Amino acid sequence: MKIEQGRRDAPAFIRPAALTGQGGFCFSAPFAHCELRSVHYNAASMRKLLPALILLLALYLVLSRFAEVQRVATTLQRGHWYWIALAALVQFAWLVNLALTFRAVYRLLGMEMPLRELVPLVVASHFVNVSAPTGGFSGLAVFVADARRRQLSTARVTLAGVLVVLLDYFGLLVLLALGLSVLIRRNNLHAPEVTASIVFLLVALALAGLLVLGARSAQALGRVLAGVARVINAVLYPFIRRPYLSEERAHTFAAEAAEGLSALRTGWRNYLLPAGHALFGKALLICVLFLVFLAFNQPVSPGTLIAGLSIGLLFVIVSPTPGGLGIVEGIMTLALNSLRVPLEPAGIITLAYRGLTFWLPFGYGVIAFRRMQRK
Image 1 (tube, rainbow, N blue to C red):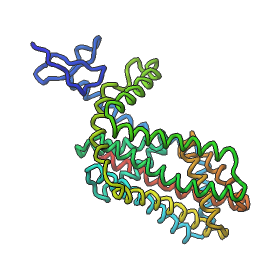
Image 2: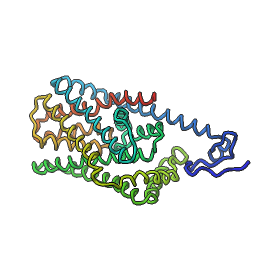
Image 3: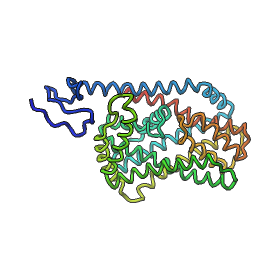
Image 4: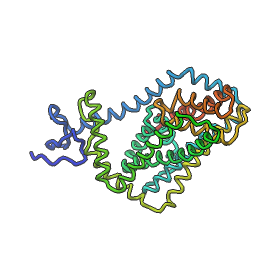
């Protein structure tokens, strides 16, 4: 029987096998007897295992922070309920605005998705980002899984997610510039804020650089991604004894992404809408923080709001813990206190704000994630 040439998009550790009645690929020796259905079975098993792992991580997060969750609930009960309820509505509006950002970026890349279907994806993605934090990128898996279900280009959808993250970084950079100017004017800028800002700026520039590189040369982007895959494989090989990522697939992904990146070579006016959504999202978070101040009868100036929020959001990104948990609470409390908010109200307001922007979306993110699994 003739052995046909293997498909080019097969992972590096799969080689073409003699076609049976059903056809297929098999793993290299000593597993040369397996067929395509075995590969599909393993992939399906992994697709079932990963959601369970994410839910397990989420459960561990809640149990390990259960005392904090109780403190958040108690703190929210102490505030005026109508301001707290309004702040919760504004927080949900922030998620809807994030879905609108995705829709605008999808349209830039030649894809269309109804808002009513994007909102659950955004909520579930936010939950995954918190449960398995990777700087905002783990939630992209939710969009990629949905793209496979809808038979959309996974490369373009991944590119859309990266663009949304970059737009979010752009919004934070604008807010951070305003916040740091307030701190400088009040002589409250210290080394931790400066260091975190530099780290964040370098990450944002590296991400933007990858997009520019891909727009100019798919081959160059493929080489960079293949190099990253090589490093990850070298790190993980002692544990799993096989390549985790395919370098060949990295080149294929770069070629597919280049098609989407070519669609971004358009007039600057087409970027105004998604950039506007990114900035509006930060304005909504300022409103949430302001409503929390009102809920606890604490006066606040616009400069204090902007500076305090910018420092809090900065450490959400650069902190090693999920969503900055355990770090942002302390840093933001100290930042507000240095901005002339009394220490006790600063701690209460920070805890309530984090309850609304971290734990509340986390709660209904579980529901959205479970609904996606059923689909």
